[in-house]
Length: 606
Image 1 (spheres, rainbow, N blue to C red):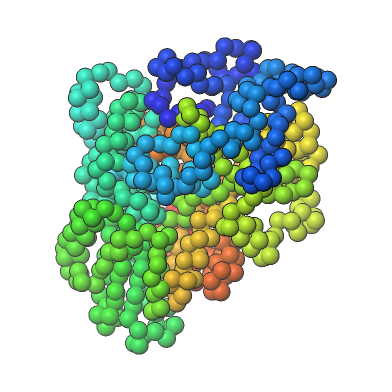
Image 2 (image 1 turned 120 degrees about the vertical axis):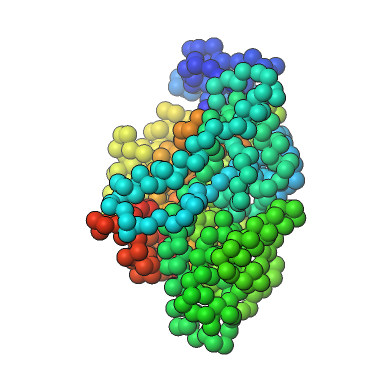
């Protein structure tokens, strides 16, 4: 389904690929005819971004021009006359050349979603998540926080723990009075919800963005714009649980989760020979509610008072000046309430991706649950030659999305592919092995998700047949999402934090990812207290969370290639079994929620 830069419209008619089988649906509130019979990812157009060499996308097989009408190919004739090729008699290259190239930084200065522009897939995703005015993380959210830590030693088993958690969760079930106020102001009866819900509750910290974002989540303008979007679409939540609400392991297992990280930090601080010569310097990428910071500092103060005296804790955050002041005051009050020294904590108002200062001192760098929202680029490969093509999203005059692919690669895409093929996990070399041939056979089976097999390992025979029968992808393979932003993050660690020790954790797998793409994300939103997954990343910007799994084996290899440091990958259970106080999180029946939950999470530490 295509998502527009206009208010969502409810309809029930079936979408059809062929325009002559059924009359397309037309929006009632717009003079523009939007083509709903195709999805944003129905077509993939092969073009060239090099204006000196633009013969690639000169003519599309389905293009309706005078030359193509005389074709004797029956299948081609049927498609040309029955399929909704979106550009009429214009070639994909003409359309691609018509629109200027933009990026996330430029779009970040705008208050409206882009039109008449093209951008890298990574810039489209980054803008959708982090744009200060309408991005998903620019609105207020809440991080689940229990009033007091759970006493696991008094809980019978995991079932009782879930009941206790449910009771603690009930405070988020209050009616969303803000939604009612907005409705009363407009004095209209809202239609059924079709868009993402938001919150204007006065949470202490407003976003998971605080762990991953290069934008401000406190921006008043962003709240206003997003509220207007939701009112227009009727997408206001019924209860506070419909708001963006995260239950992180830091909060759920406080203080034991944070103390596990503190033990790891203290032990390695001593083993690395920095104590007592260097101060203990800790950087955290985004501070959340400040719970992790307090848990770590409390543990060090109680168990290593001498080290506590020489500890500095720095939170890398980006906000407008008012938000920064509010955040600083809130964290300061939290530190004081727990008997901790405010002077030990510093908030640095800068995006990690714009970091320009070299920190030569030894430090620990904490990055928890940030990789999943790093923007990815999209690559497809030529079916015959295997040549990679870089993905772009084009937004036309009406706000409709289209995918274009060029053989000219960006620096980070080229670097990623080069590092992968020259590392321990090359795909091209695997294609010649027995395992690679088995994967090729698997891809040839019917009803197998294309995303479960790397595009370069797909059966060439099946792809060629499919390309002839369904000529919508311009002789390109299924797509692969590659973590170019993660690559940039590793480069920043190497050049700006040369003596760092990394502590990172994130999802190694996710359910309900979009079909047909390798390393695909989950794209989801909340509608009336229900989580809804959609099947494309090209959605109305700001209404959907876009989360990627991390291939930690490959990530650790690239971390080593870029920084020269070794990284160890462990499961959530393995890491916490070694560093946490396991007994403190064990129920009366011997079950341990902290170890048994989050089975799809890994730690990567250097």
